[in-house]
Amino acid sequence: MNNFKNNIEVMDLGQSSYEKVWDLQKKMQSQRINSRIDDTLIFVEHEPVYTLGKNANKNHVLQNIDPDIKIYQIERGGDVTYHGPGQLVVYPIIDLSNYKKSISWYMRAIEQVSIDTLSEYDIKAVRNLDLTGVWVEDEKIAAQGVKISRWVTMHGFSINVNTNLEHYNSIIPCGIFDRGVTSMSKLLGRDVNIDRLKMVVQKHFNSNLNKNDYPN
Image (cartoon, rainbow, N blue to C red):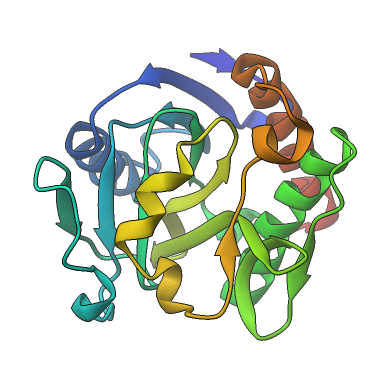
């Protein structure tokens, strides 16, 4: 674990199972609530899984789903999404009391992290005022969903990097019928180095959630 500015630590788990990291997040959120750890940014890639938010419509998981891919009902907001190899998942475990006590502000801030990150790869991504996440034209490239307890966050956001987009064919991603999904590799016509991408995300996370901008 390495320490970076603003006392936000970075935990790079490489590739790790969804269930294991989900349990880790819950433990770390409790530790952060009790001031036993510092703010931490978790980077990880998961095995193929589908996750449904607490109010997700189960009908958005289609009948052609691969029976070998596990489905998890979890406590974040949002509908159904996919995680898998080649997708960078970012789980901030941070206390918003040190930043701004606003869920909408936080959601817009992490959208901006993805937008700023993608811009360094000459990908023009934007937010949609009616839909969460980050879009390139009418295709989603970054998804997000969070759970906040006593102003401490868990879950977070994901960026499709070298993702196998065929896995999205078995769901209605985020419950949105009339839009698609894309990835950095699809747009750039080449694979992207995920380790370098993590450094870019870390930089823009720090710049968009700078504690110095929100004095107590």
